[in-house]
Image (cartoon, rainbow, N blue to C red):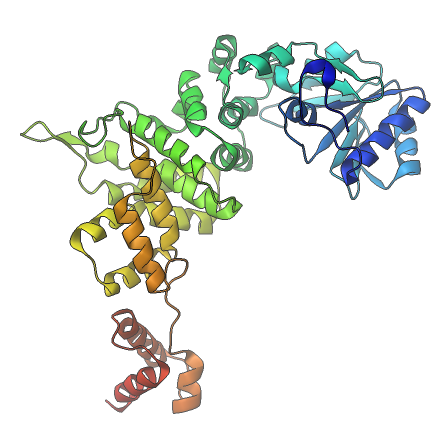
Length: 467
């Protein structure tokens, strides 16, 4: 167990763990063979921040690729990612072993690089290719030495996210990494890094790469508002016009004293982040819906004759920009549909409470969005994302959740009582238009509360068949 006593950090690398014991063995074997192995990147950053890292990256100096491969094969099973740049994955462990390497821009986009491993490269030269100073620290667990060529330790202490070198601009994805890193670690991006990012084009970054950075912002960001603010500061918000349109879109100060729709959305995301349930899929769907929930406001906001700012029907108008934004980052249709449903219905909790909606309306809502508990979370973040908002769940959200739970529709829509097999077994029917019409009609009766058990469903189906 190492607690970095020289560096005033408290979280250890656990060398008794599955990953830790193997990583320590590799570093010892490398030293015995005349090389030197360092823990690098995120695992070092996390350790000095007081966090236990799940993954360990090891960088090996002084040993050629072929020799390193043979050495690792003597220790454990590995797979080689690339002979030319010497990256090895240790099978059965969350450990990557690599030579220091140089990268030079050779094409467009995130993958447009020529990479070459060089076991004789200096620590400083190797670290230049890393993105941020906080990710450029190296720790030798044998010698107990921390190498920090770009003062990442001090940047961590000050909460500043800063690029390592001008090479940062060669990979446009790093701009979005800065977005999600600022949110995850609650850091301020250095002014010189913001300025550098303004000169970087998004080029042809593939959707799946954009998706991963937005996903990390949503499901890992402690304060997503910092990521959105950075996106604005570096002007990359222009690549996401649906988000940019929120800036300057006014809101009624009575309901939204925090300011424009962009500010409200950022605060709503922060409120969402505080109430994550740590189910990755559920958190991602809800978080994206919070991001997109007011995309319709810039399309309909106006000031009425009494001087009040209004945004009528913004929930329905938000469907198209929400779909457009999601299309920019993913082709996952199920995810898009889940998010859009929440955008379309995000005003329902307060409206249902105000109108004292009945059981039928709540059941219909569950059939439309499938999970009312998701909608409750979006609604809560919406209401908490305001200046001086009550941090507790709004009364109307609690009311709807209680009603949905009582009807057993909080986490799924009502399951049909009458199924196709019932029509086949009881009435010898065959699937077809009439078959489907009966199932749909009986389900509608069930939603309205007029049918509550199978006997009633079969009786109603029989009357339809005999008509």
